[in-house]
Image (cartoon, helix red, strand yellow):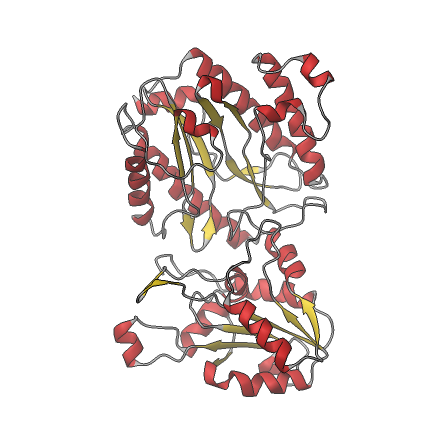
Length: 429
């Protein structure tokens, strides 16, 4: 791993929070992700399953975590099963976790090799009344590809058809949505690397630069700062491409008079950052570009103030819609008459601002968390309003990552990243 060691107190605390919500006499199992093949003998870089990482800090394939807080044998209340390392593996793949190192990372004292899993697992099930199994229950999850976790569940149901199954996902969504101070520090590190990336490219952008050249400069900066790279596929969208919400081709020339919408973020220690800034190719915004930019910035600033404990995301988005509606009228993009005649299921402002304003962020860029329960302190959200005007060849979106506080405005993890148009022009020139 490129990142520096993480204080294991984070993972100890996360396991405690999970176990506090388990039913009596139950056991929970979490699996690592697979290493995915691309064909022949090639594979994608390993990406750990966020849940087992959140609970253990183990960032290695073929790992299993078991939690059984009421096990009669104290040493079996937390168990890690790992791929056994040896000299051959060390030569061909690099060193894997030893039992001692696994304890240092996770704080889990009982570590076994995988060949002991079946025997010990059967012993634990004999004294449990139900098992927590883990699945991807994100609202926007694509679950077509079978995961290691999926295979485990399928095989478990065949082998133990009468054992009652509970769902881990609701508990994981709850505890992952409220960030520990160590997690917030890791996310701050990701945002700081993102800041370095943006500042690196500002002076390099000129008419004629290719979108992928900007992407390459960002990757250089990220890798130089202990990041694996982008937290998600970056959007480098110049001109009309900025009106395509998930434009990821990044293969066009940036032309004079255009604005480039940059939506990217560095990961650090598996934690994501998510930034959007808009940059004039010429180094100076036109009057109209600056008007639209100012409108979006106003909505972003006011929307940030609304993220307080107690509000639901549904009500929050309704209020942000009213903020955007006001700005679009001022820009002469919609009229008061359009608003009077609007369909309540698709308000008039949606013509130019068609996506949501905020989502959870953490170990995943679109992190897990409830969309119906009230927001709580130490939840972390993006704030990302935008205005997209295809007829003007212009799309403006601005985005920061913020931590909800008990009192007052959220804490902006991207407070040091340039956002005022004048500041961006100054840095570009």
